[in-house]
Amino acid sequence: MTRIARVTEIIAGSPVSFDDAIKIGFERASKTLRGITGVRLLEQRIKVADNKMVEYRVRMELIFVLED
Image (cartoon, rainbow, N blue to C red; front, side):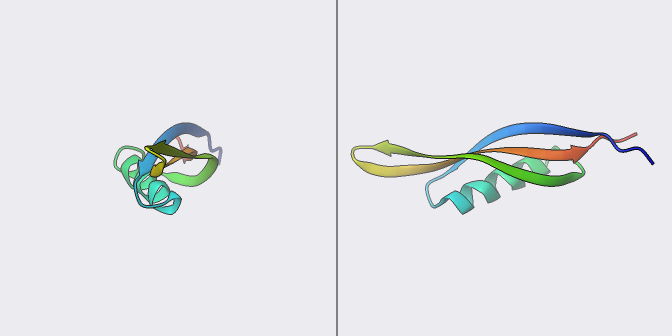
């Protein structure tokens, strides 16, 4: 059995935490991508405004198997 996978990169943000940003991104991607087999976290950033951390951002790759 041959399997072919695709990788899609997404960016997600949360005012709460990096973990929350990851969950938000994954849950949203799961609505349109089927067969997700893995997630790779590429980058974490924090948006700052008025000397306050206002948003936690993550850039991640989602790996999913292509359907026949």
